[in-house]
Amino acid sequence: MSDAGTEATPATAHEPPHEPPREPPREASVDVIQRELTAFARRARAAAARVHPEIPLVSYTLLSHIAERSGCRATDLAAHYLLDKSTVSRQLGGLEKLGLVERRPAPEDHRVQVLHPTEAGLTVLATAQANRLAAYQERLKDWSGEDLARFADYLLRYNAEGPAGLPDPR
Amino acid sequence: MSDAGTEATPATAHEPPHEPPREPPREASVDVIQRELTAFARRARAAAARVHPEIPLVSYTLLSHIAERSGCRATDLAAHYLLDKSTVSRQLGGLEKLGLVERRPAPEDHRVQVLHPTEAGLTVLATAQANRLAAYQERLKDWSGEDLARFADYLLRYNAEGPAGLPDPR
DNA sequence: GCTTTCGGTTGTATAGTACAACAGTTCTTT
DNA sequence: AAAGAACTGTTGTACTATACAACCGAAAGC
Image 1 (cartoon, rainbow over the protein chains, first blue to last red):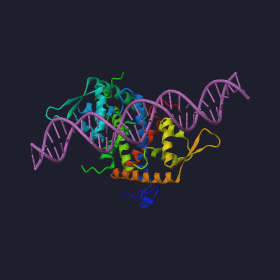
Image 2: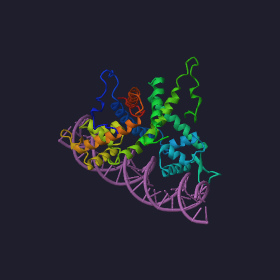
Image 3: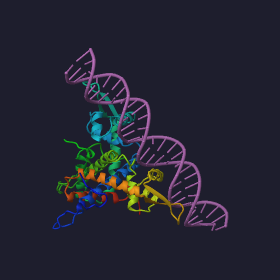
Image 4: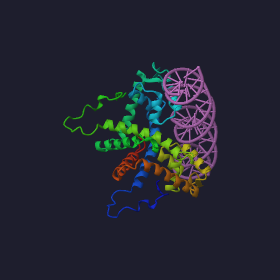
């Protein structure tokens, strides 16, 4: 599907002329969204590294997830973040070596290991969270509460819609 | 430093009670934004790799930028995307080796090289753009035009606000 | 019981990135 | 004008994040 055309194809030419053209064409918006999200992605990493060189990095997200749902398994994390098991395994290895998470074997299924944050993990997480939050807060300080809420909502909605454009019939 | 608490700290407890609590507290929104943007970043890369294994890298974005402002310099790219010069240099090297961009020395300043997309570059870009747009389009197909426009707007606004929370007295 | 499936680890490879050191240019300052 | 500072870009090195494939042990199905 999608004749999304090479650059500015006439895909939008079929709009009925009686509609007020106040709103930019979907293509333009989608394009902006695509580009800006990508741009963000780059910056986010750099910023995170800057704000928090301590915790080796993106594992922060995993740690955060673990803290939220204590007792989850590695596979859950992989599924949730669309990561390979090996990636998760290594990330967890790093977190464990840092003493931020514990991997406890599950009594009823000796294959799985249940994940728990340690005290140190929670502390680190709290600090990191605070730092990042502060950075975001600073950056978003001029936004109205309403805009913030709506923006957050859009992002949630976007990310909720199945993994990365792959068909995910849920 | 920072007692932002692990999960749901009382940092928000100082809201005047006479305000209607219809709107989530700023902290919550900011937190969601932070988390979701980060989550997106992960997925985006995976998705991009999937959609477009051809152009080996994320340099697609750089190519896109070059195509848009033909004649820009490497430093511009680095500044714009908050990347190290070396990173940009290598990315450009890759793009050049693939015959997608040209690096021409600037006549008036022999230090800089002016960047231009090649024919092939434009073609590849167009294809990639179309693919990605299609993917995004598909994903966003249930969004109203209004929501799309607003989301795009928020992202633009977010990314426009100076590099990553670093003080940037421009 | 044997085979398949599941959860996780390890080997290997690649992309992307940064930092530091460097090379050639241009601008400034004396 | 010579010396030095500032700028543009490249190269050496290292590290994180990630994937894929091969594997191991445990559990489930036949």
